[in-house]
Length: 252
Image 1 (cartoon, rainbow, N blue to C red):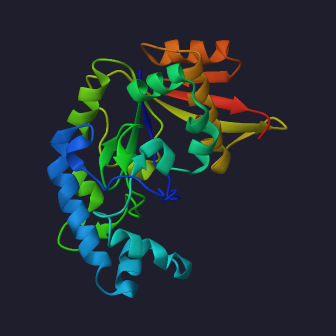
Image 2: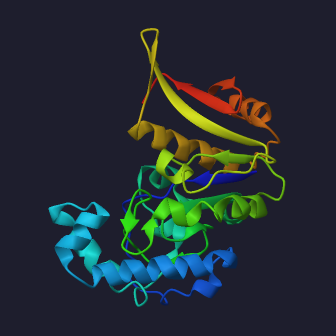
């Protein structure tokens, strides 16, 4: 399988590490676009701070992100799965992977990025701030830059395998898996007193735990029904609606 993860807005800034080297990243065919976005972001954040904050949708307490963005070419880097530190990654807990789990993660996972398009867990990146919905001066929307490129990149990484797309809506809009690929999405529903509702924060936490189990148990499914069966074997309540898997949980 190829599992597509969303990034996290929150990131851990590496303490040390070499500066960004685009040529060392996976999917080198994306490097021209990566460089254009990087230069536009650095240029924006090297100018008026208030304007940069408005363009990036940052609040008054997030000015430090602008300063970091202005020096992205000099910032230290670390593995992508150590830089992203949101709820999903907290429950995925890459720092505790065994050697086998880390190897599977490097082969199975790809992380969406407004700045880099897609990265693998072992790609070295700096902490940055750029969301999928941003429109950068001179370049336009981030989505418009990636849509022509990411479907082919996903197809290359998938190598014919099932694509499990766990990205949030804004990152799905950067580019979807092609119709020729088998794909599945996942929704988390909380059931209480006979009623079900979609959850948000715990949606990410649950997906992080699911992916962790998939890696630990070396799950490899060929289609949504096959994946649902594997997750049921792991103790999850799963319903299938076409290409969408609904995980029904009673405790958050």
